[in-house]
Length: 254
Image (cartoon, rainbow, N blue to C red; front, side, top):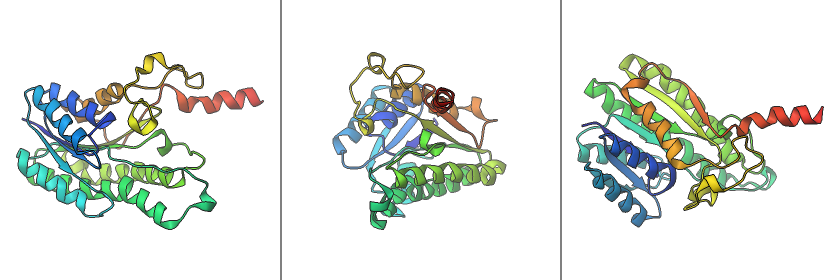
């Protein structure tokens, strides 16, 4: 059976992706940080679908921990066929008041940690000789900036660039690497957990509402599937049209 490892899967997009892949027949390894109960609950939801679920703690502020935990989960589940780098953190504040320690911490979790997990996953996929998938969850801020979020924006831009380089270097091994760039999604990170996003109005989003984590999970699951074998080095924006609003603002200002 195929095996996927998903970082930051104790809630939100990570949990939704774990459930979606389990429904499609995947065994799933998940990581959590600061919410052991949530991590173990996700593993239990995977097992409810009749698949194997393993949960491990992961603190990506330790630069090498990502690779170690991926190795541990891959050993426990007898392999790895897909890696979803979903773990992330953010902070807000003006760049002139930003301290380097905060900047480095955000980059460590969102970018350096993703490199560590991707290296270990790719090495194992190459050794197995059956190809694989790596999906890096970035953000619309991989593509457009956000005031007061310099570390997060820098990390997500960097993760988008890293995805492209990995795609180039791993293609010969049958490993496809892509990014998924969500806009506002109803998750704990955006303060929207347990909210039906279809009931929330967002006039500045053409779709008129936030996204549902399950909508992002469906895209990630497709990128992990055999049907996506000819897709690599791409970044899929899933934001209800939010990034199109710059054109609207420009039109209104002219």
